Amino acid sequence: MSSQPLQVADTLQWATRLLTAAGVDSPRLDAELLLGQVLGCDRARLRAFWADDLSAPTARRYAALVQRRAQREPVAYLLGQRPFYDIALEVTPAVLVPRPETEHLVEAALAWARRQPRPGLRIVDVGTGSGAIAIVLARHLPAAQVLAVDLSGAALQVARRNVARLGLAHRVALLQADLLTPLAGSFDLIVANLPYVDCDELPTLMPEVSRFEPSVALDGGPGGLVIVQRLMGALTERLAPGGLAMFELDPRQMAAARTLALGAVPAAAVDVIYDYAGHERVLTVERRAG
Ligand code: GLN
Image (cartoon, rainbow, N blue to C red; front, side):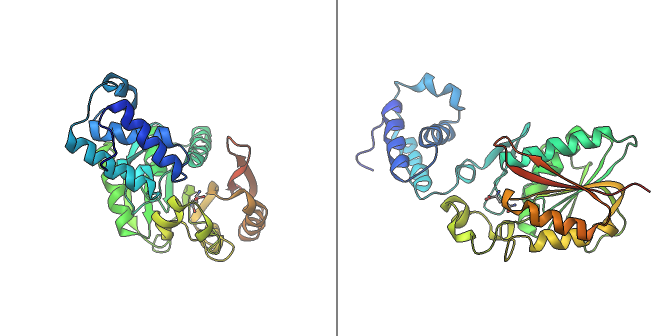
């Protein structure tokens, strides 16, 4: 690190060059986010420090973070948090980093829930990870009962801290379970960002994903739909009449997933929601009322 400059502006340039060479997608942004982290300020305020020198310990801490990012560790893990919808969530390597795609699922779920005539919707987020979907739904649907389920105890600990920090401990119940297996009763809204990556494709994903994110949150088995299909198989029992299930998926899986859904829930209304990039992203399965 002897060649690392100490002045903030030069340090940022050094870090940006290093991250560019490492193949990082947004090198300047990440360099700034990590510098904000060591200086304890947000990106917008970094300019105030432009001409300052970093102290040697701060420069060392920054260099260590930049080196980790250059090894392609996700910036969200280095910062320990990630913005999602209208909140910031704690994230650790025990949970998938919440993605912008998932905000589509949340928006569509909120829109559907607000159209329902009955209050007190029973909602379950299956494979909650950091708690992202469950927490946003609970915040915006004050009458709903929200349950968040995950197979991973380590993920649930992160979700529990997020739920508590956002003041929702009384609103969001957390449960360690394999999908909905141990539960009785049915739900009005089932939301699921389950693992859906084809296991053969997992090693080909960006290093941030394949090397650092938990494979238990990504690996959907051969073809990617193994776990999704299991949950679909439970829908006739677990989805209340008139209820909606939503699955975040890879656009390439939609045709196959649609067929699976129609096979699992006869006479369901199956639809697709597009993401900002215009890709089919969320499959919705609405069970006919009555
Ligand atoms: N969207 C994630 C990815 O492409 C996959 C998330 C998931 O499997 N639920 O890396």
